[in-house]
Amino acid sequence: MSLLPENRPKLPENRVREILAQHGIPSAAEPVAILGARGYYRDTMGTAGKNDVGLYDDAAFLITPQGMLSFNFNTDPSRLGWNAGVGKPFAVLRPGLWYFRRGPHKAHPRALRQCTDEEARNLGIPNEGEFEVERSYGQGDKRNFTETGYFAINIHPGGENTTSSWGCQTLPPSQFKQFIERVWGESIHARQNRIPYLLVEGPLI
Image (cartoon, rainbow, N blue to C red):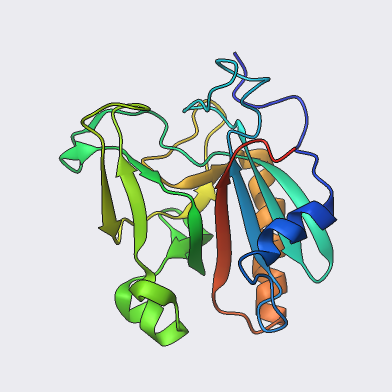
C-alpha cells in the first residue's frame, strides 16, 4: 500500500486563512504560517473514517505573502505503543497553536524545530515553547496520558517507505524541498524568526 495519496490536498486559500485567522495568524509581523490537518484523507486512505499512523494521510497548508502551497503530510508517530528509546509510549502532538524556529534536524541542515525554553523566551513564544502531547497506545486506550514539555518535535522530511517519526511532523522527501525552501526564504525575507503552526483535526471540507 502506498504511503501517499494520489493527489496533494485541495482546500481553497480563503478557507485556510479563515481557519488560521481564528487564532490571529498570519499577521503583518508574521506573514508565514502553517495549517496542519490531521486525518485529512481519513475517508480515502487506510481504515475508512479513521486517522491512521504510518501514512502521509494528513495535510499541510503553507501561507506566505506569495500565496498558498499544499503538501501531503504526517502529524503522527510512525507507530503507537511503547517507545523503548524514551521509556514511554510514542508522543502524538495535540491539536493547538505551536511555534517553531528555523534550524537543523539531524542530517538535514534546514528544518523547523521546537524551541527550548531559552529560545522561546528570546523569541517571545508562549509557555516557554512547550508542546502538549498524548503518550499513546492507540485511540481510546485507557493507558494513554498527556504530557507537556520539550520533546524535540520538529518538522522534517520523512522517508519513501516510512513516515520516519517518533512524534515529529514529516513530509514526503519529494515534497520537503519545496516546502522548506519556501518557509526559509519567505520567513527570512519577512524577518520572521518564529513560525506559527496550527494543528487541527479532520478533513476540513
